[in-house]
Structures are given as structure tokens and as C-alpha cells.
Picture 1: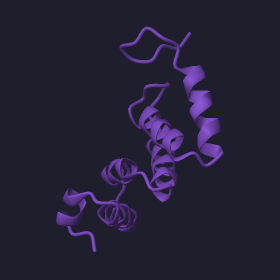
Picture 2: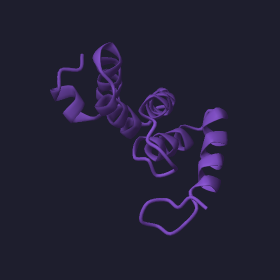
Picture 3: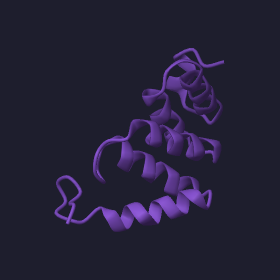
Length: 99
């Protein structure tokens, strides 16, 4: 059984649930999926997949996903995410040069 780091619990069932929710376009599920993948809490870290999940959550209007994704991204993708976070009210993203 694979355990989520520091919890003593199997991370696979929640991973399957949030994947399903994200595929169904639930932004909160996408944010949680991004966090699980980015931090390796459900196996190996998968930063490209985490970024994809953060993008879907950000497109769904979750400011925190935009911020988390911008930290993981580079170039135009990072700028897009910071700009979206700024439009959603994240002052730090606005200060970082988002249009």
C-alpha cells in the first residue's frame, strides 16, 4: 500500500477521486490534484501533470491555483497564470509584473 507522506494513509483513493473530479471540470478537484502531483503526495512528483491541473483550476477561477501554477511554470505560461491571478485579486501577482 502506498502511503501519503506523513499521514499513514493510502493516497490512491483520494487521487482517483480528484482525477475524476478534475476531468469533470471541477476547479477545486483540479487544485487538489495539482497539489498532490506537485508535492509527490500520491507517488512520484509529476510537475508537468501538476501544472496541467493548476491550469484547469485557474481557468475555473481559483486564484490559488493560478499562483501555484505560476510558481511551477516558466515563460509565457507563468506570465499567463500571474496575469490571471492578478485579475482574480492576487496583489503579489500584480506586483510581480502581471498586466
